[in-house]
Length: 299
Image (cartoon, rainbow, N blue to C red; front, top):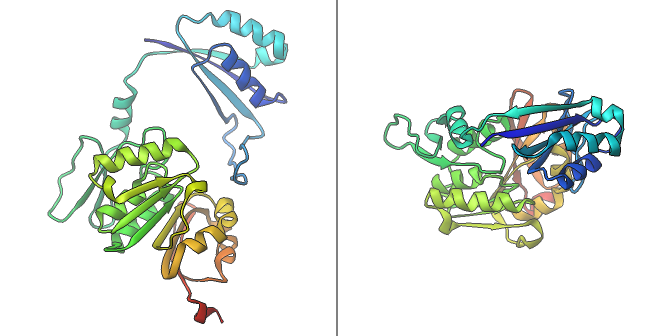
């Protein structure tokens, strides 16, 4: 089946209103992307990120009359919006196969591998393989922020430890921890789809019995030996109290998704309870590692 794609550069129009318009016209999906490839620093939790120049793209089935949709666009938003619109016909593709072709098995550190389902590298004994399909969730290991965390886990196997993966996405970090010997892991994410993807991936890797998943409001007050949060700097700062309380005294904190120029601000948010160890940087992204001090050490 073929598809049609209609996109509009929002300009001074409200992208959310354009999105609602396309949904009312029968769009299968609506996506908001940067029209000028500008870096967007993360918003505060609970806010919607928008770029200064946003492109709103709607996907329609092939039999939808987009001439009618474009006429309605001109009526509702004016001739300028119509002039900034673009129509593209898309060939039908096996998107799962496309993803598999682009995502090849990758090694992190000495023994940890992330593999698309069904693909296996030539490995030596003792290698740890994780079958992964991110679905609609973030996290495959291809981004430097995730890779930095996976390499840390490979060098510091959490044997027998309890682990929290806050902002778990596809569940890749929690699953890696479990396959490297963690006793139990919890995955927390604001996106219910991420929790579904995490459970499916954990089942695929036969570690689902040791993984629990929750939305943030349902997360318990349990303390963990290792807390990992691969999100972004502003949410990490906003969540400092919550993440601090989740780390037992003497436990490890691993923070990623931080631009190099934001690292000092993140450290400062946790400095009263943690001692930071040497971190790591790749392609402008930073991973921070810290140990939580005990009450006696803080006094």
